[in-house]
Each structure stands twice: as structure tokens, then as C-alpha cells.
Image (cartoon, rainbow, N blue to C red):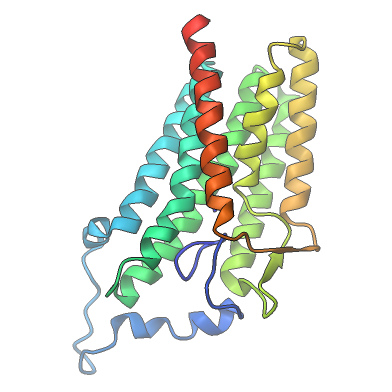
Length: 244
């Protein structure tokens, strides 16, 4: 991932504490008389365009995990990159969807955090374990990234972006984007050396996700940069697959 559509980690439009926002969650079900409030049907949220993009990103992230477990790293990286790209654009689509209900916004926000954990936390962690041939020594690094993701996303859901438009640490989508670049070194290093570099990168990213420094939100230019990065690396890894 990722604050998206009024609630996600890359572009939260309304700065302020998420704790206060959570107190207003019953508004998502407002409009019905007391005693007649009914929860929406779960599958109704799939029809929302932004939520559908989030689910497509999840599918791509799970595909990346599957490919990583099979040792097909170039294909896994491609799937992970597109999962991140969909994580970026679901919020853009949500903000440009007029008349989106409070319920869809609320569920979309919760869904976004869960998808971020899978694609930007579990995905890179599985890549690390696979590169390390599931040696027990690689477990702490994988666990560190996933735990950092849980802490970071839970913290963001509670506190969000502050009044200055900044958030703590770096967003979770930085992990798959960075790991995708690091994998370009695989063909130039020995297996052990590359595994060590990847391990170190994962640990550093885990620390940065929960670091106390503040980071400013990215502007619209960030979408162009990330899109170009994903397209270029997709072309490179597709060539590696084609020639490998």
C-alpha cells in the first residue's frame, strides 16, 4: 500500500485525529429511526469501485505471495508492484466518486488497512523467507516487518495525519517498492550476499515504518512517479522472465 479516500494511509484529506473520527462511525448507518438500523449486506461493498480496486490489489498481493513461495521471484515482484499501484489508485477513485455513502467510506478505509498489511507487509516478508530458503534465521526479519506493519496501520487508523499534514514514519507501500528495486541486485551478487542485503533492507524498512519522525503527504506528482516506477520495473522483470 498506500492514505486513501478519507481514511487510508497515503492521502487523508482531512487532517486530524482518527480517534475523533471513529466516534462518528454511527453516522454511516444514520438516517433510519431508532430500532430500525440495519447493517448493510457485506457483499454490497464489492460493488463500490474503490473497494473493488482494493480487492484487486489484494488478489495481486496474494498472487505475489504464491509466486514467491514457488521461487518465481521476477513474477512475484511484478504482482507485488501492481498490488501497490492499485493501493495508490483506490483512494483517487474513491475521492472522485460522488455520492459515496458513509458506510462505503468506512468499510473502504478498514479494508484498505487490511489489504496494506497483506501486500506491503506479508508479501515482502514471504519474499525474504523464500530467498533465505526458509532458514529459521530469516524468521526474525520477516516477523519484524509484519509486526511493524500491524503497529503502523493500527496507529494510523487511530491518529491519522496531524494538523500539519504529516504522519509518523514512512508508509507501508515503501517496503514493496524498495524491495522490488533491491531485487535487481540478485543477478550481480552471490545468493548469500543478496540474502544478507535483502535481510538488512527489510529490517531497516521495519524500523522506518514505526520511526518517530514525521513525513509529509505526497502530492499528485507522486502518482506519476509511482506509476512510472511500476511500469519500468514491470518491463525489466518481464524481460528477465522472458530471457530466463
